[in-house]
Length: 158
Image 1 (spheres, rainbow, N blue to C red):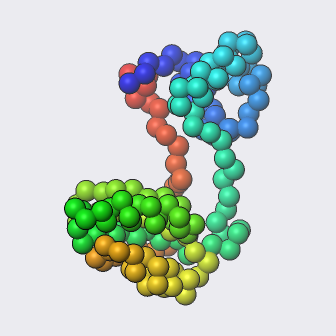
Image 2 (cartoon, rainbow, N blue to C red; image 1 turned 135 degrees about the horizontal axis):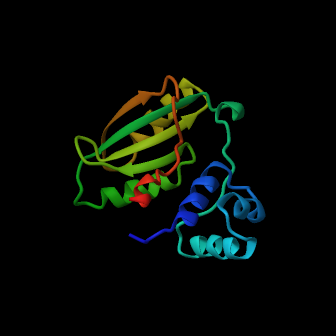
């Protein structure tokens, strides 16, 4: 694991909360002058620690009122099904995130759609019809209490 000093940890923490903060303000908040702060910022980007910046969009404001987690189990892992499934999921705009999992199911999908009818269509006519899909288990999100979250940084100070 890379080593971080207190300036870099504070910089990462601030940028997770406000990725649009100008380097001059960031430098002032962490106690560095602008040039060394800018160098550290660029190094964090160059090494891939800072992966990028994006706008956080309200799903509800753009009409995506149904949010679900879908667990997917494949028939087999030896026939190319996992690779085929991953390729298909990467093309599905409704799927905002996908993870491989241990346990009873192979994948966990985070899906957002405009309505329950759209969810039904997505599950029954797209997801379940993918080659190799054995079954799915859908869990409707009632309320998002916290998240999407930040990356915890406290362990870097130990």
